[in-house]
Every structure is written in structure tokens, then in C-alpha cells.
Image (cartoon, rainbow over all chains, first blue to last red; front, side):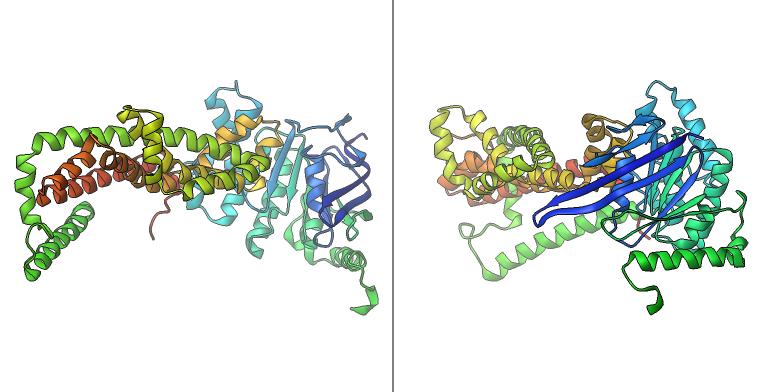
Length: 262
Length: 254
């Protein structure tokens, strides 16, 4: 099957006062259409740079990023983004926030149609009845749900998420994992999720990629052979415990620490 | 109840202030030419009411005109500084230096540059003294916009203009109105500076000056109170605009 996202031999360095700071080195990632790719790695290893590359917000020094068989040179309308910060526009209601991408991508779409599409998603994530509230009237978890709706309202090919659940408490986070799973069942999209949470990467991912410490390269790829309709219980099976163990060891290696030391 | 409180509390405070003023003048037994007391003021207003209306209007429109110029130019300057690092580095020292110049020293300069253009000079001064806070706050608001806000639209291929219109501009409005509240009072100072200093001036400043020339101290104090009143009116005008355009920034009290 053709890969929707193909990152081939990407190397990138930031220019700083102290000289070039290499962040990515010969990075290779392939995500088939419809797959969910979770990327984990030590902090500061260049994961966010990866999201900006896929979104076309910056170009790598060398190497290529391909989306849908096209070389990414600039931002494309077929990308959705969600961040740790829900980035809600405080002066708009939740509904108006969710339709924002449609105003850019499909300016000629009738307003009623935009709102109907947004409502459909808000209902899916359990925010029906909150559409006319302002962001400050909602809890952090609810704002993040709205942010997810906004990221996929224009039916992007690729959803890029940079630690979207990082600032939430554990139970809210688990709720959102399930919301994510249900959204995917109804609205198929290809997804790159940057995360620090190994359980999250296994629960949501079809593949988990471990990046090495900076400059980051693909250190380890794990195929997650679990059913698509997984429940939270699956996280407590020996099978998943083994996977988490392997990933934890890989992170240790990525951090440059000896596996036996801990 | 809430509404009553909204008006009763500030009115009560003003009343208390006037009583205190009256009391201090009475206790010290100050004559009128040292310090007029509030009870002297109604007579001054009655005597010069048509002048107050005419001059007050002159002061008001020139202040508003200067302020409007400051909003347009200050916002433009702020945008340039907010979006371009180079412009920021180039303009900041100039702006800070200019702002540090006491504006009274500019009155003769303007008077010579634009001889006899009293209205123009006054508006220009109100503008010069009040654009700085607006430029700085808009510049800071734009340059500190979190990159994520830009990225959600930029990743969709939105143009710079669209990003400015949909995100940067509304997000900067609370800072803008904060600066405008400072600028309102500054613009008043600018207007009055010219009205008082330049000969044959117009407006409340000139009325103050004529009170001084004629030794009519109650008139001078009456002018000061009239100025304070106009300042309050303009300030609350800005507050009303803020409520309309940036009311979202105000968190509901819990």
C-alpha cells in the first residue's frame, strides 16, 4: 500500500548563536494511509520540528517529506493540527472556533453547512449543548475536545498532534484517548501523534516510533498488533505490559543511559 | 441593586472628595486667590456658561481628532514593529527618545513650523503625545502572539493578511484598549498644553489662561473641574468601546 506520509532521510539543524544545532539526522518515517503513528522520544529531541516539517511550515536542510505522493514545499490545506495548548480563540464561541479552518479552506461554503459539519463533530466528542459557550467557560479537557474537532473539521488527510493531551490530568487524558479512538472509527484520517506517554502511544498507535536523543533519528519502530476497538482494559494485559517494557528500554537507550543501570 | 451600586459608589466618592476639598479650604481659612473651594464654582459656571460650552467643545473635538490620528498611526507603527524584527530594532530607540522629550518644548517648534494654524497645532500635539502607548502595546501584542495561534492558520495556507485579521488583530484588542485608556488622558494633556501656552489660544486651556490673567481663581478651578469631567467622559467612552469589541477578555467574576 502506498504511504500517505513519507519522510525520507531528513536532516535538519537550527542556526543558533552558538553554531548550528542539529535536531534531526537521517530521519525516516513511513505512515500508510489511515494509520495512526505515535512518535515518542526523550524531551528536546526534535519531535516538534517533525510536526512542523510534515505541516509544511518549514523545510528540512536535506531530505524530503512526501504527503500523498507530493513533495511538501509549503503549507497545504489538507493538514489539521492540534497542540498541547488548545489554542482556542477567546473571542469566538466554541462553534465559531471549530469552523475556523473551513473559513480558510472553503470560504464559499454556506455558513449553515459549516455549522452543521462542526455540530456533527461536537456531538461526536460529547460537546453538544456547549457550542455557544466561550472557551473560558469550558474545562481544559473540553477545550481540548473542541480543539480536536477544529483540527479535523475540514476533513484533512493528515492530522498532526503535538502532545495534545500532555496538560490534562490522567483520567481526562484516558477519556480523550477513547474519544480519539471513536473519532477515528467514524472519520478515517492518517495521524501523527507526538507524545511523552508510552501508554498513550500503545493505546492509540498502529505503530510506535522511538526517536533517539538529539539529533533525532528513527531508533526503533514497533508495530502495535492490537484490535482497532481496543478498550482501556487492554493496557493491563501482559501483552501490552511487554510492549511498554520494550518501549521503556528504548527510551532509556535514547536518553543515552545504560539499560541495566535502572 | 447592582446598577445602583455602579453609580452610587463613584458618585459618593466624588461627593466625599468635594466635601473634603471644601473642608480643607474652610479649615485653613484660605482666601479665593490661594485656593477656590467647590462652593465658589457654581457662580463661575453660571457666569461663563456659554464660554464653557464653546471652549469645552473646542478642546473635546481637538483631543478626539488627535486621539484618532494616534490610533491610526500608532496601530500602523505597532503592526510594523510587531511583524518585523528589523523595524523593531530600528524604531524603538527613536520612539523612546522622542517620547522622552518634554512635549512643552515642542510647542514653540510647532508654532513656528505651522504659524497661525492653531487647530492643526493642537491636534498635532494631542497626537504626538498619545500615539506612543498605542504603538508599543500593539507591537508587543503582535510580537508575543504564541506561534501555535499562527500555525493553526498558516498550516492551512492562510495568507498573512488573513492571519492578522482573524487572529492577531482580535487577540491584540485588549492590550490596544489598555493603551487607549492611557492615551486618552495623554491626548488631553497635549491639547491643553498648546491651548495654555500658545498666545490667543482657544479651548478650555485658553479659558484657564484668561482666568489666570484676570485673577479669577474660581474660574481657573472651574476649568480644571470641567477638564476632569471631559476626561472622565472620554475615558468611559473608551470603556464602552472596549466592552463592545473586546468584552470577551473580561472574565466573569466568580
